[in-house]
Length: 200
Image 1 (tube, rainbow, N blue to C red):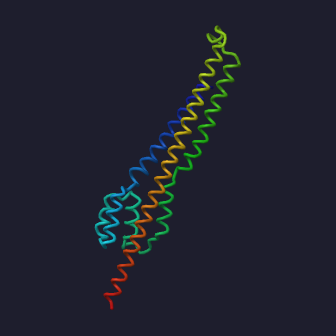
Image 2 (cartoon, rainbow, N blue to C red; image 1 turned 60 degrees about the vertical axis):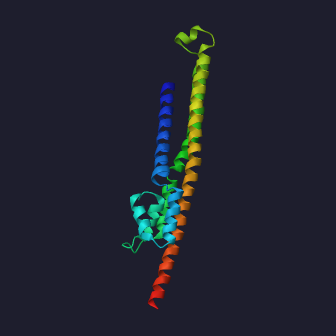
Image 3 (tube, rainbow, N blue to C red; image 1 turned 45 degrees about the vertical axis):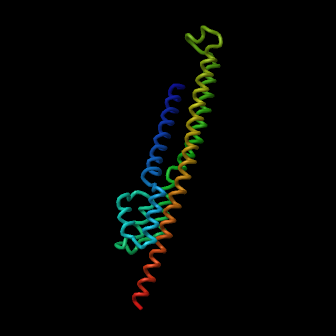
């Protein structure tokens, strides 16, 4: 039973690592935009060059900034809703972060439970070769308990560290998209003013 529990704890830790890897790929590589690129896009939009900005966005359509640009500049979709896009981006930035928070708590609990099971088995009297040396069963039980608790604490610490990093990255991504949204609104206002002036 204890070996099965240890195996389950290891599988859980590997599952947590897989979730962290997926979030790192999604937030740090697919959705991110460098500060240099954001400054370049801001300069293009201030100059009224939305064509270059849209061409850049089509090359990296999965980034938050590109999605904001493409959704806002899409003239083929008159029913587009900027508020819905903001909700989608906020959801995508925070997806599975609650799961990681739950995994952190569960990992600590599993480590403690594994330690308790190991100590209980060791102090209930070991059989076989462990019974030949006094105190050996207890020493083995304590070693297994420490190993189980260490794995639980390490998994929990990894979850909390990943959460801190991903939350900071998510805030930065949303701030970038909000900045681009503001610039696009200014660009649209300038176009309306220009069109009004030309009409007069």
